[in-house]
Length: 352
Ligand SMILES: [Zn+2]
Image 1 (tube, rainbow, N blue to C red):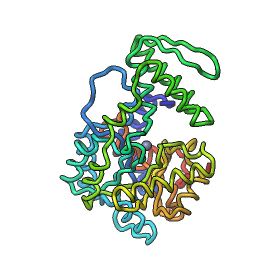
Image 2 (cartoon, helix red, strand yellow):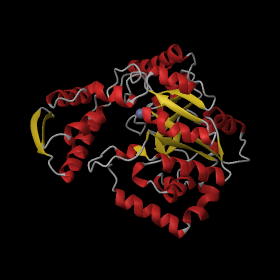
Image 3 (cartoon, helix red, strand yellow):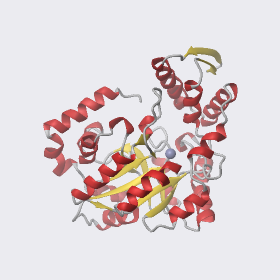
Image 4 (spheres, rainbow, N blue to C red):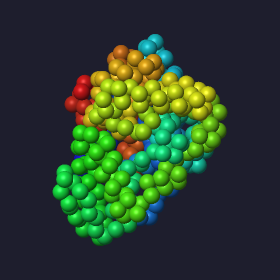
């Protein structure tokens, strides 16, 4: 959201049409990639959809999976990807499919596609979501702005009021409040601000959890399929880097213990919520490994290189982003050209 989408789009177009992604592939392309999805569902018609970059259409997912298969790239579980990295088994390139947060649309729209192609996948669950006490604060913010023509809130101790009647104003305001919230050092402060906003505008914070997220029973059905891996994603979907040592470690440990208690499987894999460098850094990478997770994924963009065997709890991912739902973008992203350029040609990015 901070980056200009038109610029990214034109860079991706440029890479595609210049063929640069193919030329660069032998050394930029890495040995594999972990793809990241959130919602998979048919598009809504609303003009204001600030969280749309977190969703793709089911047909897009199918085209991506089919094109991976056609390219004779293996779709593997995270356990298998880890084995290939550790044993340096790079005879075939591979892709892992991961879905964050456990949205119900994953079951309805993504699962049938994954099943049809027999594609292994991992779903990372913040346990407060199936426990029905999760705060999907980005949805509360979206709903408050969508349903009102003016929004008042306290920011940095001052009363503020903003117009949000037009779609353009709504997008501008969402960006403004979203990044103010994300920049707060204390996540509790952020959550209080959103709770306050929700109660002022009559938005039930539990409505999103109940409507959008899978129940434990649904997760249990899904987990019974050998294609599925259930991974941990903290209890409360917190930005771990902002939390104390104690809270960060407890969030990670408890999420694993809760999933084990509910589903009878101890998760071996973890995803850092939000997952960028403001939310996960060297302390979290160390903790994940101390807690015994076999892998942990960030949202830092990148493909996998042999060197990642030494950084299995700091793995990059490629976002299949709702803003770029064209197959040619996915191909460029997976080729590694776009992300390596963005990482300034560093192959492994695990620093703060
Ligand atoms: Zn998440």
